[in-house]
Length: 117
Image (cartoon, rainbow, N blue to C red; front, top):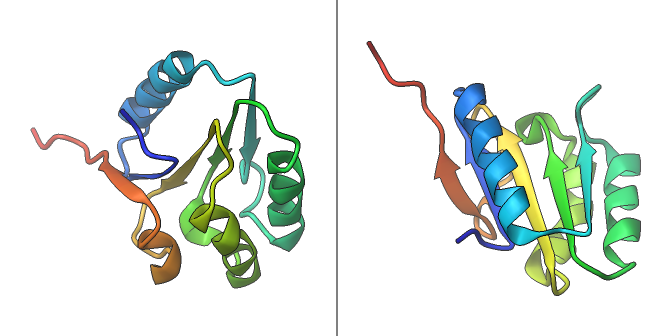
């Protein structure tokens, strides 16, 4: 079972994607929104996430390169991560631990490190 706010931490992209695919199917979100694929999440993206989260219903949000989001975006999402609306789940995809400590304290960490041969 996943938490409302989850950090998928590590460089094993293949395992992360497989995990996301399975868990998104399990939680049966009405909508899945992905941010940060083209560029790190900034304040405008954070505002859009907050706007969508206010709509209600079962939603999942995937934030790519969360370890590269701007400080303004991190600050804008703090309140949302403190009081996640019912039926919403957040997945922050990060390769490094360069995430604001205030966000780290509100999230479950799920490690995805490549197995060494």
